[in-house]
Length: 333
Image 1 (cartoon, helix red, strand yellow):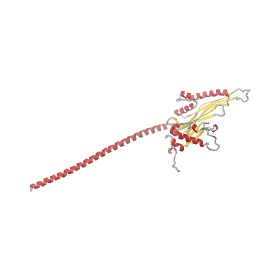
Image 2 (cartoon, helix red, strand yellow):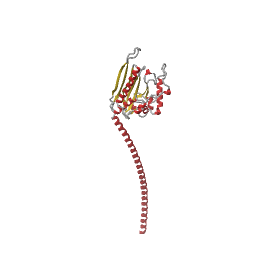
Image 3 (cartoon, one colour):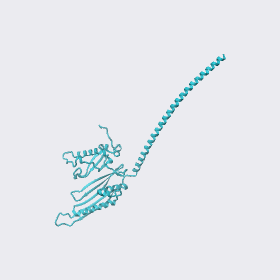
Image 4 (cartoon, helix red, strand yellow):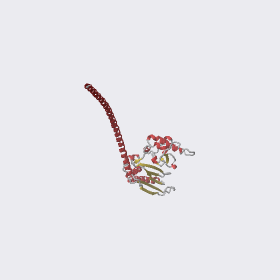
């Protein structure tokens, strides 16, 4: 009896031990699975964290760059106040030359007036005043002189000396040819300022005793951020200039298409984009000198292209947006 009980007890012990081993094995397997899953999740989290760190660092670099550009722009803007422009006379010299009466010619002229006049705009901003003087002097330099003269440091006295020389040449010609008058003048005007663009004109007038004098208006559009003149290529990239030329030609010819209009002064193959222009509220106006597109009596010719025609051709810096009051409307409206 005792042996039977002992056998039963031993049998049950082995059974219980076997159950414990099975449970333990199952727990080990489940624990291993959890460990592997946690390890996988951890690696994924590390990869996600690395990606986020890279994204953060890239964003931080972009921010740092943009902030530096913004601070630089703010600095330049803050250092360029609204202009207080004074038009300053550089030279104003004139004389009426008297000639002895010619008894053989009752219509001989007995006097001739010789004059030169120049003024400039003084803004009290050194680099801008210098740029205006440079452009003024360049109007009266030959190609050879332009290569020899130091245009990086033009002084008002340089302009005065140039026009003293012009005055002497006019005086010499007046004594020889006895015209009604001899004149050379430059008048500077300040047109205005919008954002980082300031605009001036330098208008020249030359009279050497012919039927009439000749005038020319040089428009100076200046980027205060870059401290430089704005050129045609700055506004319209070269790849878009053929389209601009077509718009200008269409504008020019449409104004001459009516009945009784005079013939065109220039053929299409000889037509050009003027590099003399100014910004208006509605677009850009291209200015052509007398005789190029029409008769002298019509003066300088302006061809205006509005922003709705022009905007797609402009470089990003000059492209108009809603901030400029420029709106596009869906077709049909």
